[in-house]
Figure 1 (cartoon, rainbow, N blue to C red):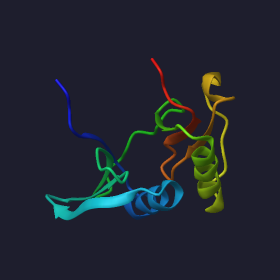
Figure 2 (cartoon, rainbow, N blue to C red):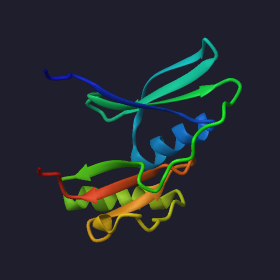
Figure 3 (cartoon, one colour):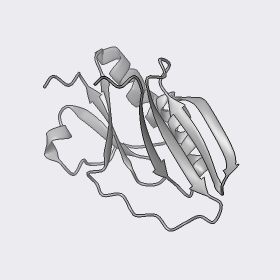
Length: 130
């Protein structure tokens, strides 16, 4: 079975901040959004091809949320070193600084950052080859 789209969804209590972060830091585009859908607001963000995207939702009552661990990772792979460098410059330009990864595997291959909720993002210099 081949899926034609892939979405990762997670809740936040900082919807505006999180959306701004993923737009400015990673260049993701708003693909869709909704307001007050049975008490939830949400925004879908994605890459230009729209095959893979993220969805962030927020309940109007700002429900308590679990804290992310340092191993909850969203990894972006860059197959060109110049694109990897541009991505790191872009995220650092808005004042986000790299953090030490929990897993030493990532140290020499990538940079780790945290979004406004503390969820970790890795920018990886290369592609994954299983």
